[in-house]
Length: 185
Ligand SMILES: Cc1cc2nc3c(=O)[nH]c(=O)nc-3n(C[C@H](O)[C@H](O)[C@H](O)COP(=O)(O)O)c2cc1C
Image (cartoon, rainbow, N blue to C red; front, side, top):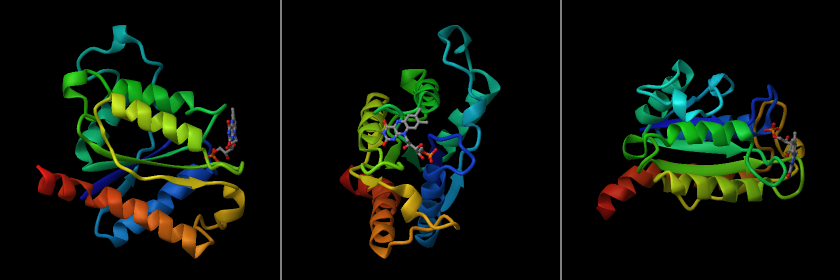
């Protein structure tokens, strides 16, 4: 089981990237391989004229990384009540061509962190909507980490055991998703 992590923040000390890495450690405890996608900043603005074949190199990398993963975990910040433009842009690229998009039927989950009290809930809702439109299988995971600067310790671990347990539950749902789908099929 390979899980790809995508953080919607490019910031070096991003709380969302820290949350993603914390989730990755828990996924590894559940036997999954976890990798964070590090090429978001290199992805050019979506232009349908450039969307030919494998697309620009940075886009091809993203599409391959998603295709190679059994599941994708997104951690998104909230920018002005929505998802960061870089993340929407990357999902737009990954969504094409619709019939062969690596996101199609891919189990995905969304978590988020913000320094405000609501933990990027609106951004998460938007991202789930967008991912649903791409044909991804959006799992029923919701983890909103508000006041992230108070809850992530300097090593990037969740200080509160209850929050770590909630993150573990989210990871468990995502890691179990392909199995659940096979059973349901
Ligand atoms: C352009 C911009 C817009 C923001 N808008 C929101 C917002 O709508 N809601 C919110 O809770 N936080 C908002 N914030 C604060 C972010 O939650 C905070 O900067 C957070 O640390 C970003 O995530 P990161 O640490 O992963 O980079 C905004 C920050 C920026 C830079």
